[in-house]
Length: 178
Image: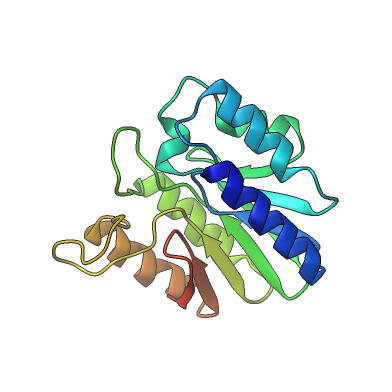
């Protein structure tokens, strides 16, 4: 399924004339070596610049998915190193929210600080890409679950203070204002 979805997204983005493609995680089924090689080849099969965040499925197997994607020229945000890519009209911020062995996401204090810094330094609007979107408190109302509620509140409060023109994109297949 991930490979089929990557191919469809890549072909559709290319048909639209996109210059960049953003993969929002779960580019592999279970982080295996063959899954990772296939995803890397698929993502780079077009002349578009490719940017990615990892999802929980990418952390499940033995492959270092981030390293494999970087080797083929994909820009990848990780737990230790979120990445900012300045594109015409917006800054793309690639964060990292998956935790090995969990469906929901988390942000450490260090990760949050990096994301806030990158948002605050943006020359204009920013698109924050995390695999797990922020969610309100209480039990999850949808599957898969997003960020833990405490992390969600901290993220929204601090990132919006740093840059009020932030939109987030994540696993729920839509972009929302933070």
